[in-house]
Image 1 (cartoon, one colour):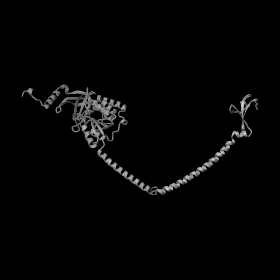
Image 2 (tube, one colour):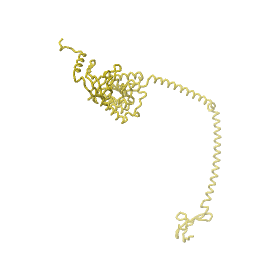
Image 3 (cartoon, rainbow, N blue to C red):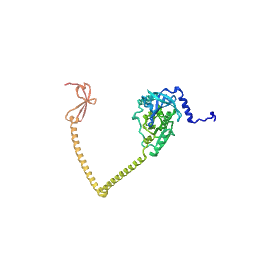
Image 4 (cartoon, helix red, strand yellow):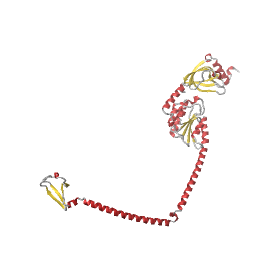
Length: 408
């Protein structure tokens, strides 16, 4: 077969690329600086795997995978840590099975916080100052939700886990799926828009926002400001479920409740139907007991009332009451008569006292009252010669002309 017609296998191609890259002298020992993300140690092999990344947005972000073999990790001065910048000494190689090129790290030096981590911490500080994380503003979850909104990828594990959980725990609820992107440049505005849409049209009583598992890098969307703002502005309670137990995102801090996984989120927003039915049965039994107790009490009261004279012999009862009423009427009449006599005597006494004080009685004893212009004269200084005055005597009055005024 002609060499031009040779068909390469994937393995042959990857091995050829590996040999090509590893054969470049300048790539055998290089120093690269970047922020460590998605860092983890393999518990079985002891090897370390992580990603070096630079840039703060999806548009200007670059990344390269790195591996730190167990024997190299045993002698380096420090271990890689998510969110911090490192300068690594490494050689370029190719992982043949995956076809990915990577850096084989032999040494690394810390440089402080990475750009991404620094930007995240600055945003967290701003939101904390604005009260976005304040427990007092977190809304309670509805006890018996009729509709549960799920904002996540329509094809991921998260939606399947939530639906399976709700079907088992609270089948009475309707699950409303609002499909969104959960990674990539469109993810943050997609999630924020779905939260706003759910609030505008009130599509649910509570919202679950999140995704299934993923790398640390996949959580970046839940650290975006627009997502945090949408959760903060939501009038509907929001439960986040990112599905990553080792990391807490800004969205988790703003949410009304943070669930570790989508399954746990489904449990948090729904009551257990078995427990609810058990509680209802217990409440029904308590209600039945209370009703029987009440009926027994009313029955005893009715028996007691039935034995009273008013019901057993109404004529006798009414006759006794009629006699008592007659006696009361007589007592009232006698009391009224006594009161009238008493008040009449008091009135006569007051009339006699009033008559004794009457000015007419004084005139009858030979006294007179001089008046000028309808007012009684109290002193000679109140009149003068030539004034006409009226002198009131017993039995009438005299019209007089003052001819002389004498003092003393």
